[in-house]
Every structure is written in C-alpha cells, then in structure tokens.
Length: 140
Length: 140
DNA sequence: AGGAACACGTGAGAC
DNA sequence: TGTCTCACGTGTTCC
Image 1 (cartoon, helix red, strand yellow):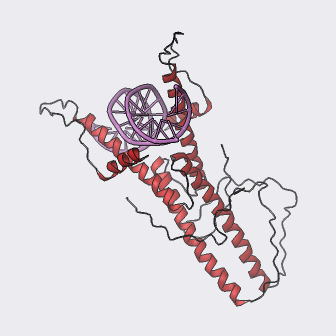
Image 2 (cartoon, rainbow over the protein chains, first blue to last red; image 1 turned 135 degrees about the vertical axis):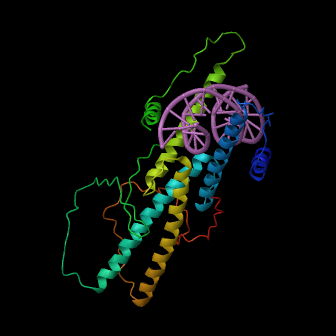
Image 3 (cartoon, rainbow over the protein chains, first blue to last red; image 1 turned 45 degrees about the vertical axis):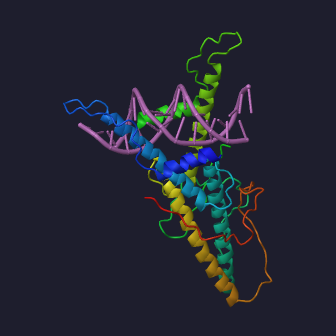
C-alpha cells in the first residue's frame, strides 16, 4: 500500500520522465524520437484519465473503495440516487404548489397498470432543472 | 468509428478468446498456463471497467464525447450541477414550508416508482443528504 | 501461493 | 499529414 501509493504520488508530482533520451541523429530518418514522444504522450493520457477518476471519487460522498471500477460504480449509484431524490423533491414541491391553487382542471392520465415505463433517451436539461428518469441496465 | 466499434462489440459479445492455447506440459512446472489465466483475467477486468464507464455515460445526460476521459469529466460536471441544484431546490422548499406552517398532511406516495430501489440497503447520507462542500481540483 | 489491481510500452485505427 | 484513443499482454506489488 505504502509503496505503491508513494510510487503513484511520485508519478503525480514528477512530470516529464525521460525514458531513454535517445541520440536523435539529424539526418532524414529520425530513428525513435517519435516513439519516445508516443510513449510520453500515452503516459500523459493515462495520467489524465486517472486524475479525472480521482476527481470523480472526490465528488461522490462516502467512497470506500479505491479501485477504479468501484469508483465508477459508486458514482453511478450516487447519480441514480440523486435523480430519484430530485424527482421526489420536485413531486413534493409541486404538491405543495397545487395545494394553494385548487385544481379545477384535472388532466389525469391513466397510469394504473403500466408497470413498464422505460424512458430510455432523455432530453438532457441544458442548465435548467428538469431532466428525466434514466433507466440503466445494470450489468452487475 | 465503425470498425473499432464493431470490434468492441464483438469483444463484448464474445467472452473467452483463447489467445494462444499453449501446450501445457504436465510435469511439475506449468509453463505458461498461469500466464494465460492472468491474461484472460486482465482482459476481464478491463472489460468490466469499460462497461462501468459506459453505464456511467448512460446515466449522465447530454453526453457528446465517447472518450473515456470526457465521460468521466462530464459525469463530474453533472454531479456538481446536481449538487448545486439540489441545494437550491431545498432552499426553495424550505422557504415555502416556512411560509405555510402546516404540516399535517404527510402523505408520501410513490406512484410510479421502480419496484427495486436503487439504494436498496445503503441509506448513506444522514437524512438531509447535505454533506460537505466539495472541492475538485480541476486540472483541465 | 495465487488472485486482484495497477502502470507500462506498443501496434493499430480513427480522425 | 500526424496526433489521439484504444485494447492488449506483461511485470510488479499487495493482499
């Protein structure tokens, strides 16, 4: 734990680690400088994704596992929970609102026996508030 | 795009792809069967993480980019937005509540709720769900 | 003692 | 054109 963590930390702090620093011959064919660049680029990409992942972990409360996969999983659960909660809150709020104004119009849709309401593709909300319940096929 | 996607899809459907299927000599030292297992295990792990990542993408609205990193980034943004929004809504609701000091009606009805709650066992936030101001060090 | 998780370099495709 | 993103196999480290 300590050793690996230290290694990662070192990797975080340190930025440009020259792998080999080849002697680039200055004729037409650059031998392996482009390979070197590719390596460092790829390394950078990896690091960035990891940072993003850790940021995600930091934004989700009560995270216990450090594993990458668990991080994403917890994030998904949390988002779903937030969705549900938000919907509930909104229902409650609208209920309060409708209490003050007597509902003369009753546009009552029949939702008695419709157990399956799958709204797959949502409309996003673009800065507003209303999103839609999103169904995720859990593959756990 | 198509080719790579097809490949990934194929990889999703297909499960056990024997890489080399070495001739395991049945003496004391198993030569590379454990290597083979390690390979398939690693492949499995990778696949799982990817599925998780796609699930995350599906739970976040208005996702445009397919890139792994962007998926996580958008998820972070979305979570932050939800946090803020929730706080706002809650403030609004508490304002309304204080306006009308009537709290006799307390009917919680879940008319159209999924048969299976997402947060089945974990009730993790202590009721109010307001935890802490979360600072994400953005490294964009 | 062996599985789980990780970072790494590399070849290949897509843009 | 080159750069980016990805999956892959492998070595290493920690349970």
